Length: 166
Picture 1: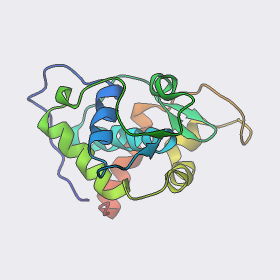
Picture 2: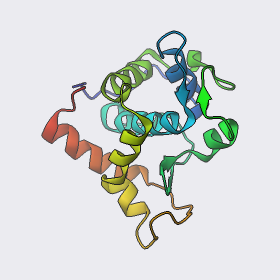
Picture 3: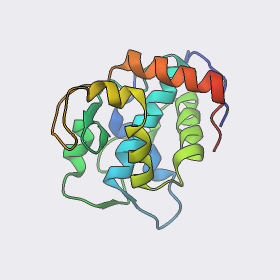
Picture 4: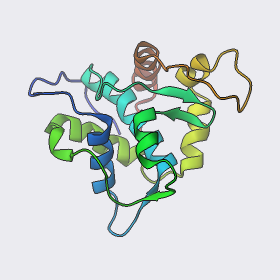
């Protein structure tokens, strides 16, 4: 995936998590839906790598360290009870700048073909989720936020050491 760091200068208003999710859903191959669980993980990685490459959060909504991995509660509430999602119910990809779409495209190139389980397992091995879950039992419900600063530090170290590839 290597992508160069850059500051986003052409930004009007920060998109919402719904805008990012809408773009992810639009980029899925024709007639293919994704699970709500996988959408959560892809949104998480978009935020993580956006912090590193663009030095700015992609969206303002908080990410929580739930038992099955990172979750944006607002997105969870929107698709609660749905397993497969084909089309966005809220948000618009038009609210993302070209630079932000480029970030999402790089994330999809690296993670888009992975299963929801694989992505969840990966997040469970990474420090931002582990730190936010500290002191909690396996499977325990919790509302601990995954800090943007922790995400930035962790994923910056991966980017500079490993040059993420798809």
